[in-house]
Length: 75
Image 1 (tube, helix red, strand yellow):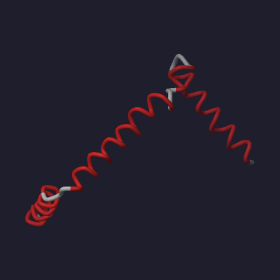
Image 2: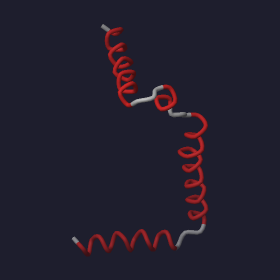
Image 3: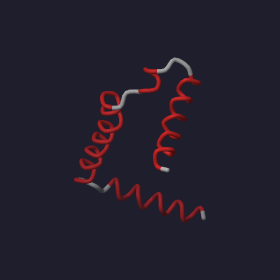
């Protein structure tokens, strides 16, 4: 088991070390992920519950109402 893990690790280590174009592509991928998850979340997905409700109980009641209302509307 240990030798298999070492072989897999060596395979990926050698593969990434030998890349030329791949390193640039991985940098682009990481930058895109940072933009998608960090920047877009800040500007386009505000914390609705935290801004509109003061306590955890109010937040829980609102979520419960939204869930049960949707179920009741479907029946």
